[in-house]
Length: 125
Picture (tube, rainbow, N blue to C red):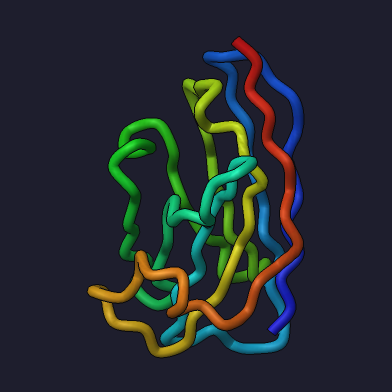
């Protein structure tokens, strides 16, 4: 599985960004595709995930209502639409893939075995 993340940048608080993750190397049936982020000096944390089959979505509380994860199965791409960005959203964002994952494990970093390179998101106040 290969994952290519893009779309990061420098924005002001309140602005929006859309991250993309182009995936290849699998049909992704049964997979979850997720976004994690890592701020300087902090651990990598779960942001959002989507079940490739069925499209069920999952979010961490701090982004619920502001971020939306979606997928385009024809393009094998997962998106993270980020609205109302805050300075605390500043981090490197990573996309990741997990095969045959159960819902209770979808927020767990170790469930994901394939990772893309990160894309930097910086939100200025």
